[in-house]
Every structure is written in C-alpha cells, then in structure tokens.
Length: 333
Ligand code: SAH
Image 1 (cartoon, protein in one colour):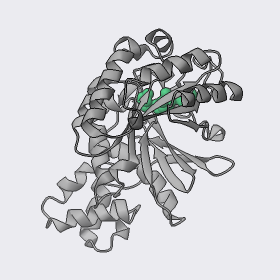
Image 2 (cartoon, rainbow, N blue to C red):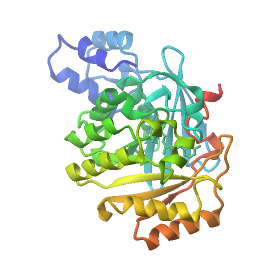
Image 3 (spheres, protein in one colour):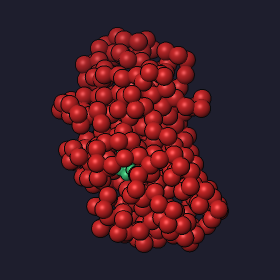
C-alpha cells in the first residue's frame, strides 16, 4: 500500500478530498475504496486501481487470544511481522521498522536474518492498520504503538518519524505521541535527533548489560556506541524533554542476571535524574543459544535495583504460542 500516492492521485481534487480519503482509510478503516461512498464512483475506481487498500497478511492467534501476530508479505515478497498485544485493557501494536536488522544482537531472531532493507512509512502504517481493522470488528481500537518489532528504528529515522506523524495525525489514526514508543539498541544520533522533535514520543533503550564488556558479547553495536556515549545522549535527551526513559534489560540465565550486575546497573543509572527513568526487566524469549533466567534470579535482581531506589517493571514474554520473539516468524519461512 502506497499511502503517499494518495496525495498525488488527489492532487487535482479540492483539498477536502484528501482529508476525506485519509479519514476513510485511518479512521473508518475501510478495506476497499468502494466503501468510501462520499467519493464519486469514478474516483473510487481510480483509487482502487492506483492505491489499493488490501494488505497481504497471515494471522496467528495465541491460545489465550491475548497476542495476535500478523505476518505481512510486502510487494517485493519480503515478510515482516507486527504483533497486537491485548493486555490490561490496552491494545498495543508492536511494529517493525526494517526488513531484518543489521545489528545482529546474539539473542534476537531478527538479528540472525541479516539486513534486507528499510521499511517505507506506508509499510509501517500497514502493520498498525492490520490490528486496527481486526479490532474494529470488536468495536475496539489501537491504543498505543511500540517500535519494538524487527529492525532498528533509528537506522530508518526519517521513515519512522513520517509514520509516527500519520499515526499521530488527527485525520489519521489520532494516536497520541505519548502512546507511541521507540526502542533503540543505542544509536546515539537517533537519541539526539528525537530530543529535538516537537512530538512527545517515548524513548526506550535496549541496555541488557551494565558494562561494555558484557554488552558487547551480545550486542556488537556496542563497539560503536559505548554505554558511556549512550548515557551521555540519554542525559541530553532528558535535559531537553523532561520525559521518562525506559531501560530494557533482558534476563538471560547465568549471563547478565547475577546480583553484581544489578548493583552495577543501579550505580550506572544513578548519574541520571531518578524520576526520569525506569528499568523494564524482560524475560528472554528463547531463540537458541541462551536460556531465560530463573524466577528467583529475576526476583533477586529486581530487589537489588529497588533497594537502590531504581523503579522497576517486569515484562513477561508475550505470545510464545505465536513465536512472539521479534523475527521468529518472518525469519523462519
Ligand atoms: N532494535 C531496537 C528495536 C527492536 S527489538 C532495539 O534494540 O531496541 C525490541 C526489543 O526486543 C529490544 O529490547 C530487544 O532487545 C528485545 N528482544 C530481542 N530479542 C528478544 C528475545 N529473544 N527475547 C526477549 N526480548 C527480545
């Protein structure tokens, strides 16, 4: 689906037509232009021809129904994933920003695929549309969007921001910027750029280790962006935005889950204003090579952080039944 073609196709029409068309796609969630009865039959025909709304996807639903994974086939036959998570009365869509990923993190299924290409804004939007259309049937909507699917969003900065503008647009999805989050493996140029944006998008940092030696073992990108560089960029971001940052920390058994690392993490974070960050402990979703931490290890790690006055949340793995770890479906074809 090429949403930018909309502007071109409607260039000779009065301006309100574009607004009507956008409302039809993003708000009324039509799946065929024939449903947009406020447009002329001739225009609907042209739009069906030049800007078809069909999305080529397969859907996988977890046993408890709380996680729905969409495997989308793009026009060049590459496959990408997005996941709808229905938890605590919120509908969150996790979207991909790239086909594959160049960062090759050792624990990540997408990393094993290598990098294919960046996604276009329309291809990012399509992923949210899949969930929105699905939820419409239950009279529900998408509440929030997280860029935690395949790829590194800050290596596709412009297209990710263009997509966010459409998600945020009142004539588009109308999802508040505060309900949109970008997760980065620590690309500091992106962190600095985001600090200067006027939109109040949330930032998450995939830290996963409290020192470079340990981090570089699982995240090769750490050789380019050291923890020191990341912390300094995050410091600038906090200064500029006053917005809370989330540090993601994967819990990998006997690797990064030892008590000494919790203490080291707390010391590292102590240089930032305490009210402006929290740590999210994420149980590693097995993709080969590692094992998830034991419950007791997670609990102990959490307690050490809390004793050091670090706010901590815990995220359990979502949707194992649908191969919920990022890249597990698209990579397995
Ligand atoms: N490249 C970005 C966004 C995509 S990954 C980033 O690194 O943040 C989104 C999150 O899922 C990251 O925190 C990533 O480390 C985590 N993740 C990747 N593989 C995982 C796995 N097997 N189990 C649990 N979390 C995983």
